[in-house]
Length: 541
Image (cartoon, rainbow, N blue to C red; front, top):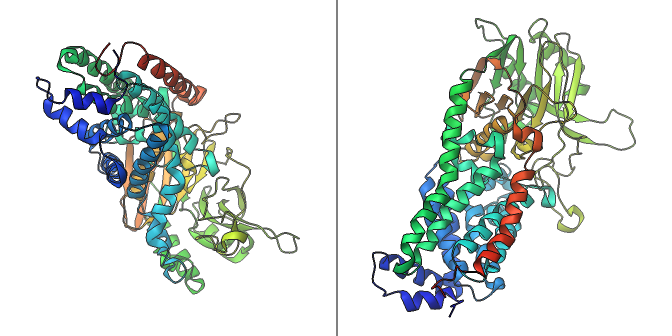
């Protein structure tokens, strides 16, 4: 006879002889937890998983986190109970992982000080339904074991992808980012992307849940655990081989970049009486003597905190500090010309030549909800954090700029770099990516480290170098293998000089995008459910 309830099976087998009795006791206690204790345990497991993320990289904690979550799903009375359990797991994971969101609100304490402590929890509550759905789908695998683990892993990755576009999208802290401490492990993203790294990680971290099988079935579990971990091992071997084969990607002849990290505190950045002081400070940094001298100067997002495109005098000032025959690329605000019937503001990048002329520009297309625009502004009655009483307008989308003296570049402003498979114009593929950002909003926190890792993953996925210029750091030159060739640390003022790495040929991920991994993840759900209905019951048949 097949026993369908994991909690019941655990109670019946908890004292069975064998070396794993202690683990069955833990699993039984976990699966049998009820009420508010169950929800708090789920939230604690989610918070524990954050330790695997940048900059901590304590990856082994994913095993107790995901294994414990599988046991909680095993003990759920139905899919609705699993849904609630998954919501609280997501609440713990996302609240702790995104705690730095409060820092952005504290830059305006007079407006948002009271709500700042609740902001990470509120954002997590918006995003937590996606891991909740993954847990509910896993509960449809009627018996615990391999089927439930595979169903959960496939559903988790699909929900990470949904999180990347639903309600404007926020794919921050994807599970695949936990491997950023290893250049070799990141190379798999060139084939399967960050979602593929995450799928292999979730399967390996959750599969130890099957060790609670009775002792008579344990020998069959060891090959299974090895099989679950083998994709990670293969990714590592592939990564080592790829790095050895490519070694040095080379650099672009005649291009010497200078990244200007002004380190202007967010509380001072937008004060009108300090605008010229901020500009002059960054101009002086950009003019620091060097050998070889820079050919192009790059400033961060909103480095010029004014409507620079309509300010001829300040444009000429920046033009005079631009290298002869070169360009200055900087972040600023752009607005409709005077007299236009509809006033609009864009978060933009301007390209300025030595005459102070605007050669080209890019307007940010993927805006931050609540930061750059306020959803339901008329209902909620709040101003957005960065836009205030006026929402920013959306640009036309990612595009490639063809600028004199530079290879074709794909500009990305702030968190536009966190979206896998959505950072380049496929019809006009760039040769490098330029990410201007202002992580001063995050303060001294884990946020800038997590943001840097997202940029490194896009470099590997697309086979393109990424140059990242951040107001308060971390500014970096990243080669197409995701390796940081040079960087300026967090909360430092200075410049970072270096050549522009050459791109690689298009990667498999760059050609296909995430669709192959998403299809595999989708197929794992019915496969896992079907597998759980066959000969993988908890106690056998």
